[in-house]
Length: 471
View (cartoon, rainbow, N blue to C red):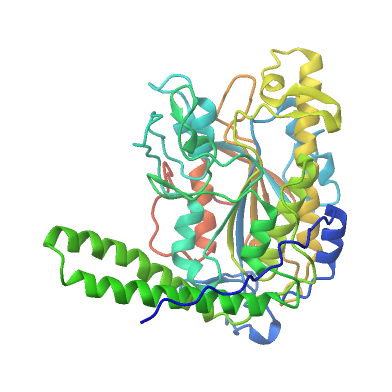
């Protein structure tokens, strides 16, 4: 078989994409990307509010609309006096940090009493920021190393993706607004891999997130202008398949000439090639790509707030179009010392978090917390405004966790974590409450969420001791 000819360039590089964030988001507002359609929903003979797990492992709402799960991480904990609401149950008043959530109270649960004991120092000493990140979705203790022998645990998103990910174009989506670092030393003898990754496919394999909005957009919806994307996608798929055919054919002819040891190495290589081939075949089963009537973002904006807004927008689009049902977004790695001159704070975030009860620094850390919250609130409002196939909002049919692996950044504590659970889980959750959970592993919440996602046969995640009740 001849090697395939190099295809013509799919996108004209000379056309500079200098759209502003506002132009991009306006285009997204005119999006025609297809969400789950009512005509495609399968009837589910369950009582209202129940979750049904199909034989394929997919969890859907009682109406048959897809159920989504996402995790959003903010760094360095929260200023405790400003974070927690007053009152209890459905009778609560939002604290200062959560003022951007006014109007969304009926769509959120504020959860207290969730802990990550494996993020505490124990015998490992310093390194709370690395442990906070590494433990957040795994519930496991990270091995203290700055070498290649990293080890923590499988994260809840990847546990869910293994069972439900095959029914969407992307099993999971990993996003970040921070640097991407896979190695090196970052925090008191811990590898950077712990601090810059939320999602872990195995104890030693992080799922590297993407921080460039343009690359995320093109991955989800293809390259080129709106009218060109499907054709470009088909050309790329055909080229990839031709290349794979060539590689496999060439490898098979070579395999007959190799010794046993080399044959084993080649088999391992071909296993990876076949996995790529299976992913291509799987992608083809979903038909045409969603096609938003918007140009791709130009790249990473210079303003951090705009960067967060773009990544939140892309996450909302991915969930609405049912491109994935499992996602993570790392707003910044724990320990981030980013300054925020756009809100009048030239000092670094980490510096401010160690306020030592200095009133000026406490005000500044509270302002930073509220800044992050405002962008998260805007994301929730977008999901609430997007109508799903069953008439509910996408937010209603979602479970969105917003939180940090540090609780009090001033003291580096990991009990009573600042956690918000947004969405109604398709009717299986009871938002509109401030719920005190009494001190239990956060991993218990993960188990309860994976139950709703239709994950079967799971008894434990990280250090879980059971399921969270009454959320």
